[in-house]
Image (cartoon, rainbow, N blue to C red; front, side, top):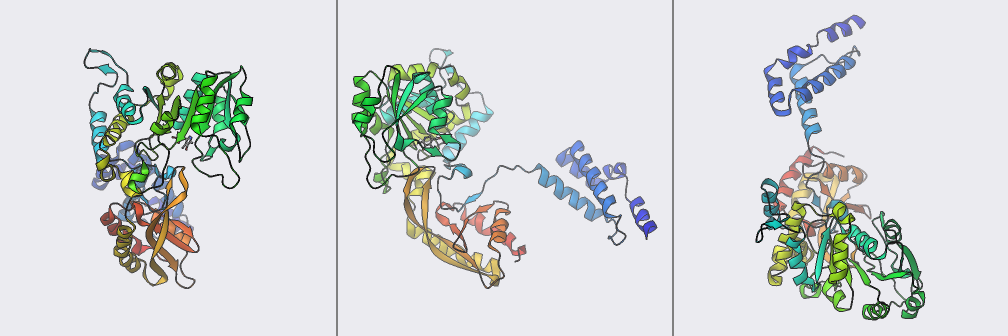
Amino acid sequence: MVNTAAAARRALPSLDRLLGSPAVAELISAYGRSRVTEALRRALDAERERLTDAEASPYEENHFLQSCATALERSSAPSLKPVFNLTGTVLHTNLGRAVMPESAARAVASAMTRPVNLEFDLDGGARGERDSHVERWLKELTGGDKAVAVNNNAAAVYLALNTLALRREVLVSRGELIEIGGAFRIPDIMARAGVKLVEVGTTNRTHLKDFAEAITPRTAAIMKVHTSNYVVQGFTAAVPEPELAKLAHEHQLPFIVDLGSGTLVNLEDYGLPHEPTPRETLAHGADVVTFSGDKLLGGPQAGLLVGRKDLMTRIAKNPMKRALRLDKLTLTALDAVLRLYLHPEKLREELPALRLLTRKPKDIAAQAARVQPVLAATLGENWRVEVCDCKSQIGSGALPVDSLPSSGLAITPVGKKGNLNKLAAALRALPVPVIGHIRDNALKLDLRCLDHEEEFVLQLEKLKTFKT
Ligand SMILES: *Cc1c(COP(=O)(O)O)cnc(C)c1O
């Protein structure tokens, strides 16, 4: 037996012979010589190992090359790719938050492949300011005197604090010491910004006099943080923004507000719950307002600061701005998205984030009714697929306790045969992975964010090979 196995191993082709074969020439043209050589070498080693088992099936060249091709394809595929977000959370941080409009995508494609006047003033022919391209829209849409754009809202908060309060104290209510998504905590950002946090009031109640009593010669600013991912309910009190602004200004202190999501329109006009806007916050007397570009605003990842000219000028001049600044692609996308806001009547149609948030429940239900029989037929008798009511979340810390009525599909195992975790894994393994969530012994797919329905249905075909 040992001799047979040894003979089988000796019968394996040499690497050189394989590299000269026509089938491998195709692989080389697709993946390059070095990667193909490496893949063949590895596969031959594995084959030699496999053949030490006398019972192993003999070497078969077509099969061998096919598995090399599959391995090469897999190892060359991008790991960052489109997915179907059927989690029910529209602005899902782990799934890239806001989906952007085609107009932004086209503008970005052109900015990627051609030179652009990023920091070049076309009127004067001299050096320009990169933020100027979005600043004009931000001023118009918020009423701020000046705007600055950075990598994300965490960076915006950092830059505002580091510029206006370095080595001094900033007052924040104890009810607003938020943590967002694990890594962003207001106290940590303040420490890293070189600012001493002074906690004011209590978790549930903070009064104007708490702030007034905490002001000392070391105080550099008063800050308000929008409690974007939780609510404090019951016996509560917070100081209204206009009163905090007045107190700050009586002491010549800037009043900084971190809005978090910060939409640029009144969401109630679109049938959604109210979320404070930068314009309102500035009107309440805030001197600097920070907010995200990719939450309710519906644009690319960015942090935006608007406010009083003198303070914003200092913020723009902070050397850290260079480290946090936006690149030309993000600025281009942001410009395209902000321009949609100039025409609010068309915003719902043009801005995907708003379109998804305001989809009519009956349209989503109709979509669920269309998809249900296809999925039921694909999964077969071991699974029950039913149209169900869902409650979508806005996500990304916007309006945490409000939910949007939606529809979806609930998949439950019939009898003991179906394994929900395996089914969820099979959906994630599709060419465009499908992400749902398991709850109450069902895999739920909220269809609110199901664009590309045809592509979704077509790829379900691939699930037929899934059996549990
Ligand atoms: C989301 C959020 C942040 C962080 O914003 P990123 O854009 O994710 O960096 C900061 N503050 C508040 C209140 C937020 O909601």
